[in-house]
Length: 398
Ligand SMILES: *Cc1c(COP(=O)(O)O)cnc(C)c1O
Image (cartoon, rainbow, N blue to C red; front, side):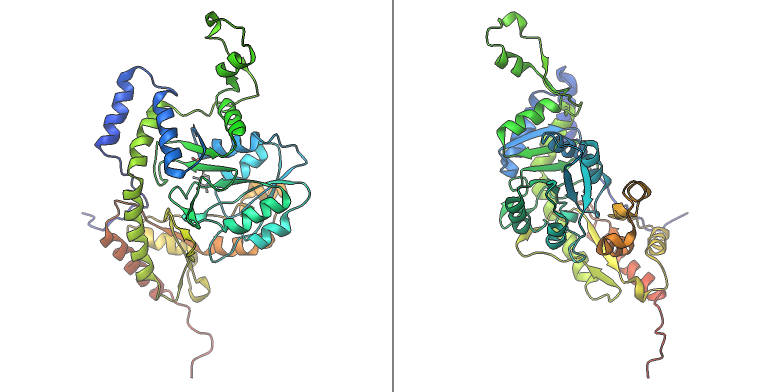
């Protein structure tokens, strides 16, 4: 019998409240976008302080819609971090613009404002800062660049639902903010996303784009003489998409959002415990915090000092797996992937900080129902693995 301890990389926390909410929708007869979705959007506006919120079926869709609403051309450039999930970059390409990367600060994992400024050209129209692991980017610097160079700021807040910067809630700072409710994110609707936006006209356009570019409201607005007999007709106003959220997802989202502070507090306690236990291990580097920010503690990434070890990062992950511990990598930097290398002619040295961190990072298990004793087990196992694989000094110490 295998009695080895198991620590899953992630487990969801779905309770009876979520089950009841979803069952109610299933029995109501209305499954697609409706009252639940509107209620979820309103709750989300209250939580983030955003002026407008549009529920969609993924963060990827939210990023795409924000970019589409800007009517970018193939001459326009959009800058993002190479140290992110592929969606932050691929949506720039889908929106028909030119993708540019700017390197990160290796201590935070976030886009480096100085690298960002160097990458800005007269063609730059927008920037997608990614709040890595839930630590907000330096939004002072980024908003200053946005005013100076007239850039739209589309925040990828897939990790940063609970975050704030200088007491300002993420979702109420940039022009657009995109959130994810993917299965492993801070709250989940299975799949889902939300786009917040301070501009009413752009928010309305995004809402229309999210459902085929179709508007019943606009039909009424542009044809004031129509009688009520035509109320079921619609007009296609734009080349739209099928990105709407269903009421099944929204019902889940409403309950999950009501638990967001409970989830955050549990992750915070576990992240702090990791930090306390890991901080004196010389072969581990922690990412920086920022006293100006509220961290969402979405992920617990650490950097291995591979120069002090005889094993690679991947071998370390394999040894952790053999000890029953699930780990992940956030992220393999985008310019190290075949598609981005081949399409844009990128090489690892183009973004040295992202390359360096990408090759050393390991994401440890972190979620609300992770037992605190499992945090201790993970750290003790890491210590054991590192101690057994230390590089001996080349020159004997005298
Ligand atoms: C998860 C994630 C996304 C994509 O979210 P989906 O809801 O799955 O589309 C985008 N950006 C980052 C940084 C992510 O981690």
